[in-house]
Amino acid sequence: MIDTSESIAKQVALHLLKIGAISISSGKPYVWSSGIKSPVYCDNRLTLSHPKIREFLIDGFVKKAARHDIDCIAGVATGGIAHAALIADRLSLPLVYVRPKPKGHGHENQIEGFLPKNSKVLLIEDLVATGRSTILVADAIQAFTGFMPVATLAIFTYNLLGVKDLFENKEIPFETLSDFDSLLEVAFDSNYIDSGLHDSLVEWRNDYHTWALKH
Image (tube, rainbow, N blue to C red; front, side, top):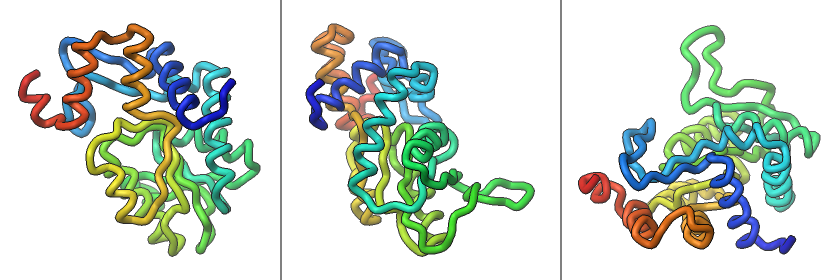
């Protein structure tokens, strides 16, 4: 297996397509929880049901995590929790998980688990779409520990315009195992999509508001 970021990104994209974690529609668009209409939908929870793919993803996360000095792994609730737990177990590090906002009962915790002040936290997401919920979690970590996460790692991002700027403005390194550009290439080369759908996907990624008006 060729061990480069580009080849791994394509392998991850193909795995996600094959197990249905990424679905692409040529007809009725999907509607995200944010209200965005999209021809593509990613549900990385499905990777947890496929041991070999799950292990491949954790291998990729651990390799990226090795570049950072970290004390704790934090999963973004809820999609990032399981993968964060697997990474924490592999690295023998503490685990916490963080909600975008405090829960409305009991201790009203936003961060679950023991997180000491001044901890160097690696934040784990299964998916970054608009990035807004991830930034809310990063802000909560900073408020609690005094520091922003040392990095955010995710399985996949849609490469929507402006998302990288959110992380750069917070000075949080942001990396993914795969992304929308890798998906486009793999989906076309593997005949999951034709040239027309490929162009529609590019149009959506570049301006999803205008794309939605047409669909």
